[in-house]
Amino acid sequence: MSVVLVVNSGSSSFKYQLLDMEHERVLASGLVERIGEETGVATHTVTAAALTPADGPAPTVVDATSTIEREIPDHTAGFAVMLEAFQAHGPSLEERPPVAVGHRVVHGGARFFEPTVVTPLVEINIDELSVLAPLHNPANLAGIVAAKKAFPGVPHVAVFDTAFHQSLAPAAYTYAIDRELAEAHRIRRYGFHGTSHKFVSESAAAFLGRPLSDLRQIVFHLGNGASVTAIEGGRSVETSMGLTPLEGLVMGTRSGDLDPAVLLQLARRADLSIADLDTLLNKRSGLVGLAGVSDMRDLTARCDAGDPDAQLAFDVYIHRLRAYAGAYLAQLGGVDVISFTAGVGENAARVRAEAVATLGFAGVELDPGRNETRGRGIRRISTDSSRVEVLVVPTNEELEIARQTLSVAS
Image 1 (cartoon, one colour):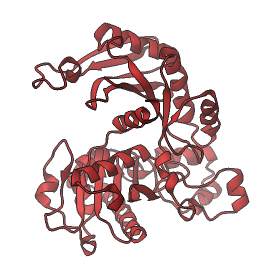
Image 2 (image 1 turned 45 degrees about the vertical axis):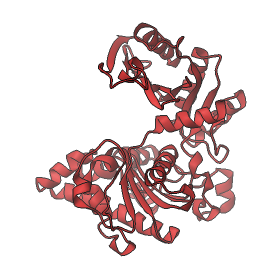
Image 3 (image 1 turned 90 degrees about the vertical axis):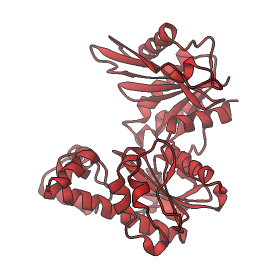
């Protein structure tokens, strides 16, 4: 059995999954949080799949979750707690030892365009790239360092959110500012959510039984953070996020696209500092800035109740989705598949319907019944006669990280 441990590390928490890659099923998952606080919390879940044979009958057991609370001073201590949970509750890491550990790393800059076995030099590069992702790369690196202590005898692999978008052409990733200044400070568009966009586009091709190389796709990853990518033949050719995850679509708390002069005006007239502007754009904008709520479910409930602020926020959100859909139709010269994924994309039928409502000219025909019907797997929501396939594709970034990890570690 090929078992891979996937780690997604933040500054004060980390998530993990143990996956059986022979059958691509989750054996266990967990969350270690409040690292560095007075009382940390660790939750560990052993899945039903870990307790039943992969080729056996339907499981008669359910997932089993355990929780402990105690001081967890740093990531190294967090991994010790995780190992204790595996030992106490299973599955046994002696019986199912990981052959590799895969790590999500947010920013790979222009240096990393594929999954990479972590070496001391790679760690130095991840740390050096923290200037481009100061909130994420240091935390990702802390997880790598701690995980290497916990699992010293197996390869550790970094999988970068930006890697999928390294296929962008210079015309797509270049900002029209002073070239020498941009090069000196590595100012360009990098794109994010690449692991999800790759997984969804490949899953869509497999679902349709069509070669990935033949398809022009638009993938909407719509969660609290949101991005859209134009994919041709399996390669990212345009994406909405840029130097940081702030550019592009309207998000839960982030503004998305904005006239840069707005910042100059606010600095001059409202006396906002750089830190104030950072907080404004990342935490006090988007849906929460317009309507006071960041969750699409809350927003649509307020729309239904007649709240004009909520309705305006929803309309702005949809307007931006349509604008990007039109732009990417032009970049691709048409589209074969449009997919929706992540929390909003997978669950908000109203958002999907409104996003493609004006794309009839491009051959998009949505089936209202299919769109409103909830489901767990990949499903078609376009009509049988639609020239463009419209799909809901649940994303699975952990599985994609595990696949990429195994591809370079085996």
